[in-house]
Every structure is written in C-alpha cells, then in structure tokens.
Length: 110
Length: 123
Image 1 (cartoon, rainbow over the protein chains, first blue to last red):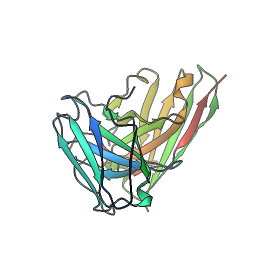
Image 2: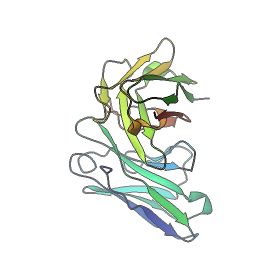
Image 3: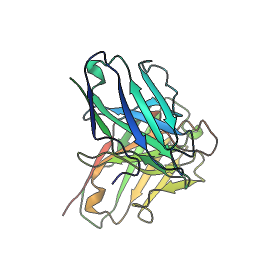
Image 4: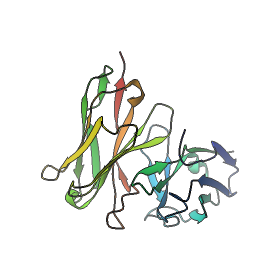
C-alpha cells in the first residue's frame, strides 16, 4: 500500500486535458512544497516532469503543470498527445526525512 | 553527458547479500546527494535510501532499515548499496538517481536517473 494516494488510471482523448491527483497528509504533501512528478514509459527509467509542486525542468513541455491544495497535489496535462501515454508517479518529502511515492497512475490516450 | 550506470544486480537466494554500484559521469558527483529507488515487477516506485553529498547523512525506508547500507566514494564517483539478509520482496529493478539539493539538507527529488539493475531474490 502506497503512502500517497493516486488514481490507478485516467484516460482522455487527444487534445483534451486530464488531471491526476495525489493525496497525502499534513506531514508530507500538505506540509511542504516539495512535491514532484515523474513520467515513466514501460521498461524505462522515470523522468522528472514537475518539481517543487509546479516547476518544470528544462525540456519538459509547458502542457504539463502542477498545483497543490491542502494535502492534495495535482498534475494536469493539457492538449493530450499520444506520446503522453505513460505511468505517472507523484512524490513528496516527508517530515521524517523519507521520500514518499504514490502508487502510480496509468494514463491512456484514447 | 550526465550519466548514471548501475551494476551488480543478479539472482540471489533469500538471506544472502548483494552489493549494487552506480557509476556517475558528466557532472561533479561530490556535489550531489544520491538516492536509490526500486520498482518491483509490475509495481510502482519505492524509495529506498538517500545519502548526502559528503556521505554524512543517510536515510532509509523502514522496509530496508537495518539490512541495507548506502555509501559513496566521491574519489571514484560511485554510489553503493550493500544489501544484506535479502528477502523475496526485495526483488526489483534498482535505480540510482541524483538529487539537485535545491534546498540545503532537504533531499526530496531526482533529476537524473540511471537505467536500473535487476535484483531477483529466489530460492
């Protein structure tokens, strides 16, 4: 059982927007702006997509955005493209120094 | 280019030990904290451990505490994970990853990942 809760799957059509939620507690997601998101294709290493809740690393499309409200962080992908089909994981710093991951969300582009 | 290459994985019996290595290149290894993250077959990512840039601070997930030891040799640009008393549930792909340490002494995200090395614990 993962400590951060994500939906197992989400789907959307090309051009649409989708949002993936990530729910923790006040000791992790809610207590710090240290939430990150990773994209992972099957058989590949994860790739950093968002850090510090809403910052995009260089090279990541501006179609990816992040936000947070209370104990829940969110990743939004706008203008869905076929190449966005992948697994997405949220992560957060925890008060005991641990790093927590969500269980992952499989994004299907219809 | 910035690169991390893991090695040392393999098939091992329960209760035995294994040491993973992660060779870094293309950046100043001694400036960055480093993580180990694992992924069991068909499962999600699980953080394992982190070590500060100078090796003085180390944190472990509860599931490996007391069995795994993270270390680094900055003169060799290499990160290690010594895994003892291995269990079937330790079977996973193990990734090493770099932490940019945007906030001093807070280790919480990974901007560069290796391709992983597979550890299988089975009798």
